[in-house]
Image (tube, rainbow, N blue to C red; front, side, top):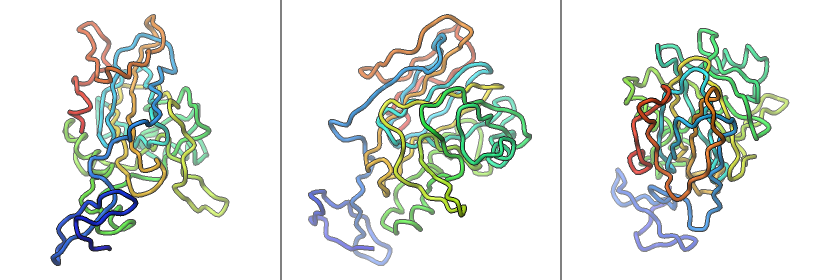
Length: 288
């Protein structure tokens, strides 16, 4: 832990100071409410699967998001800035006590990685979603989610005021009547967690890039909860949090891939006759 005066600088970045329990201040070089730097390369992408677009949303850096994806609809997640982990939980929308299970998913497929063709299963062994397209070699589901407590343990007490994915999950799940007991082990889209020959794990530099995508098809009506990871204490995203784009299409209705819309990245509310994949209209500012 480093104490510092407010006028100190490090690498030309002003230190953010917080009151310390024992008096004085603790300092952090991690900016609060950080967003991507000016000039960051962004690729807003498009749906990986053709069909009528029923939902198109942008998840602001550090923010949570959720939506119900109807059975048969396909959700494409776009890593707009590259190497930005999309921590993800899945629930049976009709019975949220049935939710995504890491051990069931991995045991059924006999593999530690999530790839194209992986069936994402519940604790009942039933399919919730299937990975139908993936522009990365593999996706992670064993690295877990960051949180205030684990970040403090890893990086020091100067980060104790920063929220993590667990806090995002709790805030967003609460909008659907879910609480702490409903937060389980999660998926980490675009995060690189290799499994070594000796079983060791590590969160290392990502394999993604701006515009890379993964697409998952709902096998039942699924509540999807996502945290656009606020992690600013390791270099996986180059200390530069960027947006995510979430596109849901109905493959059974005519329509092409969603076109990029970087100039108006808000949430489009489905029309009255739209299929059931929907969420309340929310802007990135609302999510933050």
